[in-house]
Image (cartoon, rainbow, N blue to C red):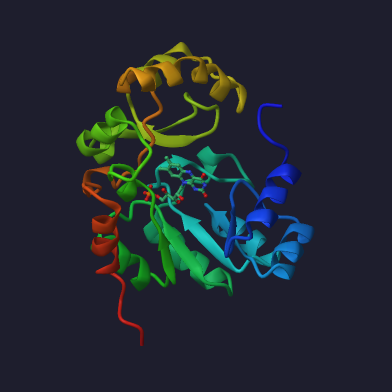
Amino acid sequence: AYLPALEEQLDAIWEAAPAVLSVVFGVPSDAVVAEAHRRGIRVVGAATTVAEAVALAGAGVDAVVATGLEAGGHRVSFLRRAEDSLVGVLALVPQVVDAVDVPVIAAGGISDRRGVAAAFALGASAVQVGTAFLATAESAVNDAHRQAIRSTSADETVLTRAMSGRLARGARNRVVRAIEASGTIAPFPMQNWLTGRFRTAAGEQGLGELQSLWMGQGAPLADYPTAAEAFAELLAGVPPRT
Ligand SMILES: Cc1cc2nc3c(=O)[nH]c(=O)nc-3n(C[C@H](O)[C@H](O)[C@H](O)COP(=O)(O)O)c2cc1C
């Protein structure tokens, strides 16, 4: 099989016993939520719309991630097509806060203290940040990707199915333009497998124009040499506890 079965992945989770199990692309089953809770593991689900947040809260998750269209990487939409589930953080977070009783974690475009402060002002209880850490020394991305994060403007990122068959935000590089122009994109996971034929070699050779350069609209703000510096900046935006 191309990907391990969900049961196999869950067995690994139960063995690792993390504090939190975070799921994307759907609502965890009652059995998964119950087993996690039996083991003292909190469950977090990710939503791109209010309806998805309500579905997740109804399944008993302990917190909901509200993921705005600014976010880097794959759109985790599951009720409707990702293209029809595009809401920005500024509108999404307060509506999700109003719709569910569990804490809301804001995600998408938050790359410095201003973004963190804004998310809390919208009612979020926490933030989830990806892009701001991508270019740090600790990140596993290669140098071409690191360089691209530092040099790509927000309007040069794009939501595309070209690289994996699923809608995701990254740099609009040469390979994205070429695949979109071809008009032929296979569904996930086939497209992901197909582009994987050249992505690995491109990464090894430092060819950023032929890789998936995932990053969010906050990329120009994500200029932190180390993860510690990114954390320090983001923490400065957390309001004092009242
Ligand atoms: C390269 C990349 C890979 C990601 N992989 C995952 C993942 O495996 N699971 C997940 O829940 N979120 C994943 N995310 C989403 C982040 O957890 C986070 O929600 C998102 O990056 C927030 O938006 P930002 O990139 O604007 O900070 C990924 C994001 C990026 C950029």
